[in-house]
Amino acid sequence: MRDEPLSIEAWLATLFSRPYANLWMGAVRGAVDARFAAVSLPEGPRNAAVIARAAEGLEGVTVVDKPAGIARLFGKYRELSSIWLLLALAAVLALLFWRYGRKDGLRAQFPVALVLGLTLACLGYAGRPLTLFHWMALKLVLGVGVNYSMFLREGMRCEDVDLGAVAVGVVLSAATTQLSFGLLALSAMPALSSFGLALLIGINLALLFTLFSLEPDAVGEARA
Image 1 (tube, rainbow, N blue to C red):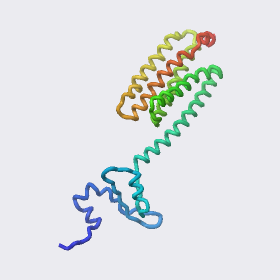
Image 2 (tube, rainbow, N blue to C red):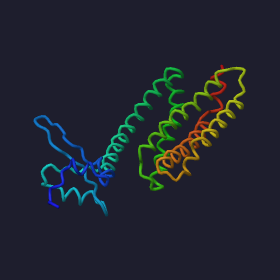
Image 3 (cartoon, rainbow, N blue to C red):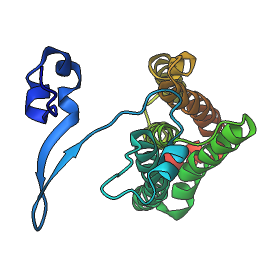
Image 4 (cartoon, rainbow, N blue to C red):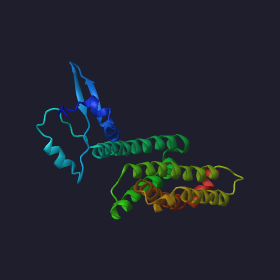
């Protein structure tokens, strides 16, 4: 039998190439000409830094570290989420100013802003690094916490509304939110656990500070 070089076409035609045929990309056309490309998956311990150093200076070799790329993307989204949270705080404050005036608007916004800061402090004290899912939960805490303040203050504006019933409704709303989202803190998945833990802390603090931020004298003034 004559020894002949094994061509790519002949290798792709064999049965033992099927598990690896998808690694051959074939001709990849560039700006000037067409080049052939293939994907190689390293075996054994996969240290991305070591592999990247080994590939330095090799023409046509590019190391693709997908986990690192996803981590960088999530880090960028995390930074943007913190900015968007500040912008959302400013937008909510402007809306509260329009509805309740400067004094009552600040009084309605302050508990929620304090809750966001305390939640971040609790996560830092617990040694939990901030992730994108923490910021997503804080956005939900902002929306829900502001709703608690608005429900109570709108009830104060009505003459025939039982404020005790309104407060009970807010407490039940917080309880159902905790049961539906807060229990995610017990999840074995880090993403769900981060989301649920931030929400668990934030909703409890939002409920507590919102109820105690209402001054008894303000109820009579609002109804008058």
